[in-house]
Length: 381
Image 1 (cartoon, one colour):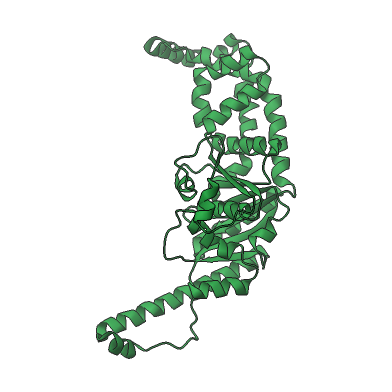
Image 2 (cartoon, rainbow, N blue to C red):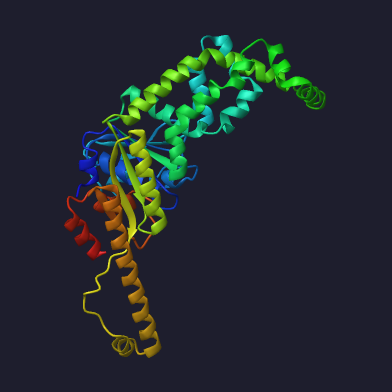
């Protein structure tokens, strides 16, 4: 069984994916902090709108540019950074979309026409897949600059993370779609295509709102037409980056049935897409041994001075052992379904992880050198 350090030893990108509520954002932050503590220059990127990542790294807020985590926080948490650096950012998809337009626009006039167009201003925030596509644009941009040894990406919940994989093709389908191609023709053509009914509707909207929607649509699509080639080429490069051996997808899940099924589903989609799978991290695992000697309900009642309380404590412990057995069976089934022994377990901790010290505790399991070492650590919790 490998540790995270071994799985990412020669990687430049780590993509953390999984269903919601399984500690994926915390895991991404912990991986980034752990690799930084091993002397690497690491940046962690999130498209999760929650501020958990910023809080856990001791940052007041995150934005669309990387911010360095204060090295003093490593020392305060008892972590030796060994010359490593940790940076973090939270994607602003609208700002990133604007940056992409500035880069791909053929000239200054076209750039301003697009950025100031009302249709673009709405689409750049609301277009399906734009957030995921812009996450990959930002990932590609930062990677191309070569300023970091490792980039760790925290993605949306796994069904949305599949959108993350499909985003380039879906955005290109929109850009190259027949509706857009019609609007790339002279403005009047779009009106004729819509027909008289739509023309009347647009006229009414124009009188009520003062906005010529059809004109805005035509102007947007015509201006955007010169950027199709740039988007197509960038999408190819992003896909190449995600599918090569410098990238590793780490699945994150909980030991319950539904998250396990999500992980198996996402693993299958990764294989179909030709994306490199690194391993799976199972969070919040319960540990217990049914074979260990334990007190009876009567003995606990005598010890606690309350027979009813002793019975409740005994029943509660039996429930705990049942949960631990369930987790053990589910994890074994997960490894078998995925065909891998790269399954790293993190126990259910008694407290929330909200700072670097908490991330360091998680990393005791993520970066342990063997399964026996992880079990020994868990037994001591």
